[in-house]
Length: 183
Length: 183
DNA sequence: CTTCATTGACAATTAAATTAAACGCAATAA
DNA sequence: TTATTGCGTTTAATTTAATTGTCAATGAAG
Image (cartoon, rainbow over all chains, first blue to last red):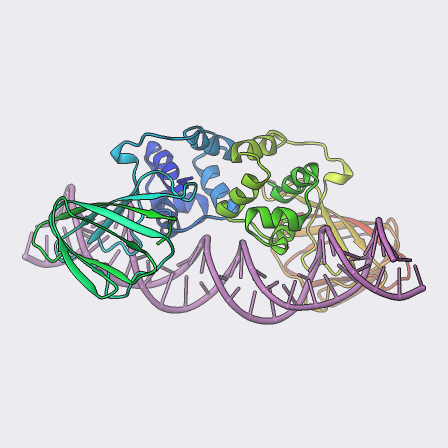
């Protein structure tokens, strides 16, 4: 659905800061930040307050949001959705399309030098594969460690504990696919 | 907004029970019950799940909801919204219009025999007045107690602690007004 | 009438959204 | 430099929504 991007767009169109809109709507700037980053799904009541303050109707808000929602096939690079859970800026996971509606999740991943998805192990259902586009990444799967460079790839059962680390001194870019989508 | 009534209407149009819709949407029947009674404001994500299961788009849902939202002046009796906080069934507070947008709140109140808004005192901003339509009600305001019958009325500063009790053996009906709306 | 199934509602618990207070960053001015 | 202001973000605590496990009421079947 990407409520967040839509809200941010119309907020910025009006030249409002998160704090300004927050005070108009009777909410806090923190809440707006979380909503715009799709870290939380606002209650209908909260969203209504925000839209009343802008102002724009719920129907309008969702109309243009759902228009672009007819089976979408092509995505420009700025349409990828950032989904990195802990946003330390070290790891960027940019998702192709609005997942959840598909049984396939494709990510455009960027690992800054030193970036690390661990040390807690990632475990989830499905299978996972990827190709390294540039840089180097150390991939650990169920105890097996390998350093992959541009052109290399991986494929494993996601239920095996796994971890990614950029141990080099250049940015590492990976394109990966998971099924079913989860993380 | 009355999300609840709108949801209930379209759900019943499709001949779905709360449980059926709940399982389709991946929620629980309890949640739907609360939403339909306007006891909670669902998250956009929850509402989306429900509407996808019906199915109907968000825009559609809010469009017809906001259509009837152009400055409404007349209300049929079935359009009053029940707002009694603790629904013991003893006290019914049916609100004229969709408050919050107005600085005046009018309630059509029904007190069953023995019904009591106490013993905790009600205190809020504004003024409050009412007329007894039928039956008898004991009204206590700031320690002053009076029993009012059909045709009688009251008017006081809402900041004074107050309480209503139907001490008779017949249903008591009162029409009241508050400003600003709150309870 | 009893039994079984289904309905909507509710209280207590769990999960999630929201707040309040910070933080880091960039631009500006002293 | 060193404050100062305004921005978006983040974290912990609080508030609110959602779930779970009932409950009484209704209706159909035996």
